[in-house]
Length: 114
Length: 112
Image (cartoon, each protein chain N blue to C red):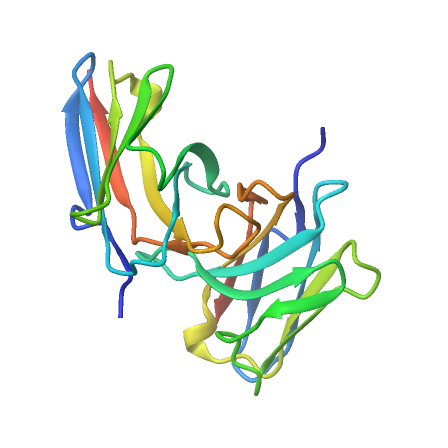
């Protein structure tokens, strides 16, 4: 039973354009959401997060949007750069932002084409 | 600030053998996690420690997997005996109290 779903295994975007990665969740107890980026042979690195009390959080080129009624979040990268090519994982926790274990999606492999 | 350290980076064993992984978290992080990432999947939580106590081990296959964090700092994860389906990357992570996990580079285990 997958509680966090990333339905696109891969996404190809031209350099300079917007990349939009999507994530859906089923557990209504989740209240803190994170995006991680992973390069081959490295561990995931934290990118950006959002609490359920917000609907948008922005950090430079990265913006995360949360639609609680639809149980959906998305990560926007503008403009996309070659170094953004990686696997992106959506993750969620239900502990109010505390140190709870995260539930991860399967990931989306983003490929930025020159 | 030093990151999460894990060793070894790679391990190849035969089924029914035993193996152990080591993790040293970021200094001052009270919470430590072990995750299993099978190829093509997202990381799956195996066990979570708060200091040296277990918070969640509901997804740890306890008949073959064990983990300890005796002094509340570094931790070891052991598999005994290993099965073919244990082939995966084992990730250690630590966090303070803001919910952001910091991951090590992982140990890639191949069981033949």
